[in-house]
Length: 424
Image 1 (cartoon, rainbow, N blue to C red):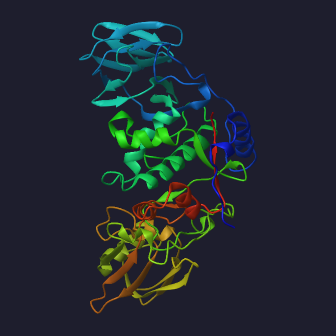
Image 2: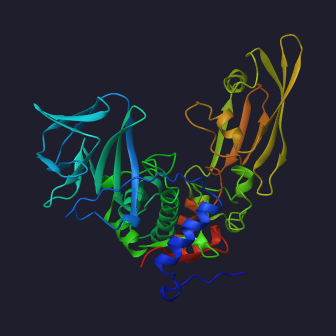
Image 3: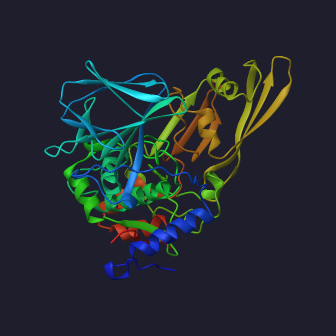
């Protein structure tokens, strides 16, 4: 069925969809923690938004003292009042003291359960440790760790993610791809908000989405986020579960084959065009070569064999998913005592076990052929980069370069979905 994406006249109202979001998440995909905490708002801070549009990014958590270098004029508050204004050039030291936090500036100390740092009225952006953040910073202690959380408007958060997770290209060549991606970022983040964690919503790194604050923003990507403001991806009026990756290699992957998720109709394997849109990706085709010793070491490091005293007899792909990715990889080994052992590696787990030849990262994908050459070296020839589920970033870029609009791009990678508004 071809989906016609909505114009503004079809976009849903915020209250209805926030209720749908809450109900959906409670009933199905997410485990909720009901002990929510107050989301502190600083008056006259230009970045402060309505509570439902705030996201809490866990910037750091340390067991010992936290030191913060102040690079712009900043207001220091506790949960009740303004405590001080800190000028640039100062250093703030925070440590745990008798179950509370002690914050020291020069010879002055303050005590509170929670501290807040916000920008001044003249310069609302917080600049610390050479980095810039919108919103406020909340500093508190939990489980013997001092945590620093950036509480920020959702739209500003999306702006801080765009360039950290997606190539922006030259000029407007990636414009439609970036519009589609901004909706993916926003949808993912909104789902994290509705997990209702007690102290934070989202990590600033690859555990969730890489977030760079103001320093990651560009005028182009900020314009794109503003253009798609409030738009999320949905399926049957409910928020879509979002996955994305660098390049799919020609076919995306069914979510259940990678993450063992529910069988979601909009996260099925789809062909990325007759000539893959993502074939323009750097290193779309790749090759890794391993000496026998290195390959055996990877199996040992993964605790699949008790010693490294094994030799390779054979390695072969036993089965593949419909997309062409490896489902089962069979490795036959023999030890010094002529004892044989067979290992079967499954699906996406293969990537973290075998890794790249230099060991610096996981294998680029499971879309590969594997063989042993005449020198007993293991040779893997593959294509694509990532798990392959959902949004193919380079595929979206390829479509954008061909003039395909962002609605069509999203419908290609998430068939049957629709764009709705989470906010008026």
